[in-house]
Image 1 (cartoon, rainbow, N blue to C red):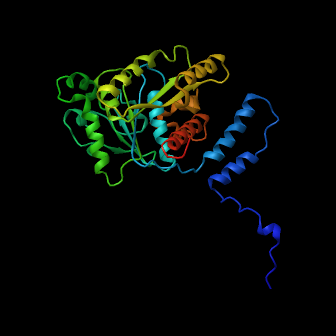
Image 2 (cartoon, rainbow, N blue to C red):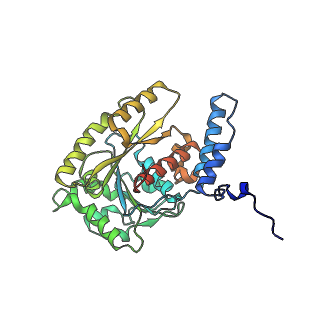
Image 3 (cartoon, rainbow, N blue to C red):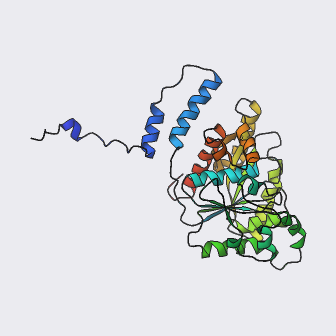
Amino acid sequence: MTAPVSRETEHQPAAPERDGDEWRDAVASALPSTDDETPLAQELASDARRRLRLHGRVFDRPETTRILTVANQKGGVGKTTTAVNIAAALAQGGLRVLVVDADPQGNASTALGVEHHGDVAGIYDVLMDEMDLADVIQECAEVPGVTCAPATLDLSGAEIELVPVVAREYRLRRAIDRFVAGAAEPPHYVIIDSPPSLGLLTLNTLVAAREVFIPIQCEYYALEGVTQLMRTVELVKQNLNPDLDVSTVLLTMFDGRTRLAADVAAQVREVFGAKVLSASIPRSVRVSEAPSHLQTVMTYDPTSSGALSYLEAAQEIANRGVPGHE
């Protein structure tokens, strides 16, 4: 004989699905707060909650491929580091990501562990010989879901060689558009790592993209290099690419212990408003070490505060690309 169901049981809400997003949020919220007020204990407790909330999440997919150029005229702001780690974090969220390394230094190619020596076809061949982008793309062995179009040393000469070329500003855009249109499974994101200058290569990356993603370090003169970039973006928008928009700003090298970092963050948020991501990237030894091991921090030390911060930033970016998300 089946026992009768009590009214209390009958009206209880269904428990959140185990390992689902609601379940992770509930467990993270239920963790007791530490009574130890030392900064290290607080950081460890905070990271434990973040890991619970972020582990295993599947990010929402955009309706069409989003193409973002990571750009900042100022060097040393974490531009390439941001490009490869955001790509890896989006892939960990279940998305397909193509990284286009348009910086002759080839640091993004190095960090993703793809070959980019002189005998390898890369972005130079796409720009100068109009080779199909699909023919130069390599899989990233460390991060499933990430592919890379590498930069070889030849790319350093493209800045001069592009000068007499007809429609020189549209070379990269045509290549990316052809690839996305013809791919059986097009990438959800194309992330372009641009050079730390405002020459023809950077111009190609701005014409190819729909969105500009600016990493800004939390240090003195943080906005100094951004002013000229914003002027260039506006000129490109008026004359070459009306769809271009500065959509995302990420604070990097943030040190919450200093007044300077807080002041710079406040200044950046005042200038860019809602375009600034809530997540910020802390100064992290692990983030700096990862490229020397031909990895992103997402695989080198996925439990580090730097990896968690990039994962949070990637989730915000993914949410902003889906209607209905703030």
